[in-house]
Length: 161
Image 1 (cartoon, rainbow, N blue to C red):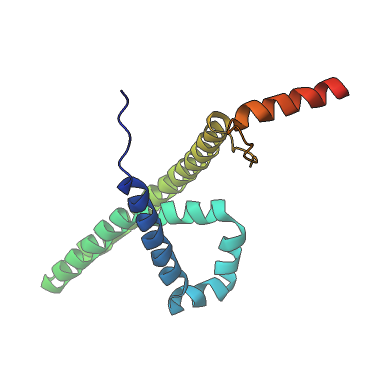
Image 2: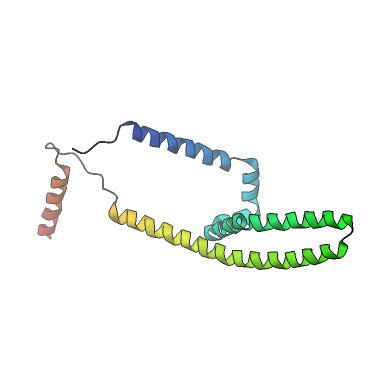
């Protein structure tokens, strides 16, 4: 005996889908999002979704190094007030060069991650479409055996040609 899913599962999924669509709609109707999407950069990213994904991955991945860099800048500025001006210039220069190297590396990593995400999406959607092809709409016949009626209709069409 196979256990059937409770009927509340489909209701839960519909409720989740409704909540997600409301969230997406509220984000799209936000005045700052609308203003950004009307800007030339927003229009460019809207036409180039791979570039938008790459920029998003880059910004997310570069937040930690930029935060550490700003922390070092603030701490060395405090040390400069104590009297260590040469150390501040040296640390900021080395930190700036280090940040430049890290951000260049992160740009390549974000391109690779974006490519992997896009390739995974295409592969998974192709596999899902292959494993679960969309079913054509069929008419119910009086016996209720739709698949048998469809197969016999297909076979009749083959023999008539």
